[in-house]
Length: 536
Ligand SMILES: [Ca+2]
Ligand SMILES: [Ca+2]
Ligand SMILES: [Ca+2]
Ligand SMILES: [Ca+2]
Image (tube, protein in one colour):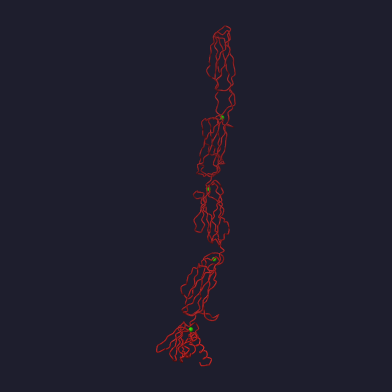
């Protein structure tokens, strides 16, 4: 029979003397006996009683029987007894052991970290539970913690989480025993166990691969003037911490940052960056998992090249005197120099011209291209004779193929003009008034050049001065004129000569009526006739 259930029992008694009978019940479980008294019992009487057997059952036990001996005694008050014994069996139902679960942290923890161990258990009967946590450092058990929880609703989960600071690095195993029983009964299914491993280590700084770039050897696109480079680094963190990477590109641009959501162990960081010029760039990645002292720096020397071509001199020229191989300019001569340069990318060209005579160099920044060239002109005057080296330094300020800082030089020979000019005023002339006479000094010579022609004579008592190589003058007065020509060269040397103009007489009466053009033609003709006759 089940425990804790009241059972109704009966017994049939009789007495041949028709006495009153006492029926005494001894329940066999230590509880007080009970006595029923009947009336005269010649005829059998059924006597009823009820009793509850309540065997004491330890928690966490079951699946067995508890038996009692029920003894019913009848007496008639005259010393006559009769009794009967009956075995009462209480069936104790099965008791189920609890199920339990223990969860530790899924990733490594630090020695100073307060680690939560999540413990839960479920007992079918909802009995009070004993929780025993046994800590083991793989060598031996070093700590046992025992907790108790009261009875709960049957078959419901009960939690008994604990925290622990391990204090040192290592692998630790924590075993949780949960029992619904007590004492020696805490065994077998009534003392379930579950285990969690906890890896305790100082937080490790991130580990990383070297930075590498795509492309590996970037080349500036000369048309676009830049190159896009993808920089890649792989980072590993043993705790799966959030990793932050701060990138420096070594080109003066602001830093860029990558970060991860954490939880993974290997990350790949990528940064796309535009480099706008060639050179050697120190690319850095500062990595940290946020734990002080766990900062790591990786760097890459990125060599970015360019195919930019250097500029070149197309033309350097100035006007010189003399025969090829013996060209020269003169002291004091205002010489015009012309320089023409080209550049494949039409980059701005910086130019320094040093005339080699101690005068300050001239600086140019040439930007206006025409037909693919830039040019400049400069006039310069040397003040002393000698050989001078004209040095032209030029660059497009780019880095690329070949050397972009270039020089061009030329030697210029500067001489003193020590040759005076030779004046030639042309042939003497005989003309008929009125007449415009054309002077001709073009036969004058100088090694450099005539700077000045001055013609002087006296006409009608007044001095006349004419300038130029071929001036003219209209003569009306009949006379022989002595005209002086003085030529002066660039250096101030001079020479003089004289030409005679004889205004011989008036031309025939009709001549003044002729158009002036005919007169103008006629005079040189007469002049030629005179030369052929050998007058001069
Ligand atoms: Ca149980
Ligand atoms: Ca870490
Ligand atoms: Ca260039
Ligand atoms: Ca001269």
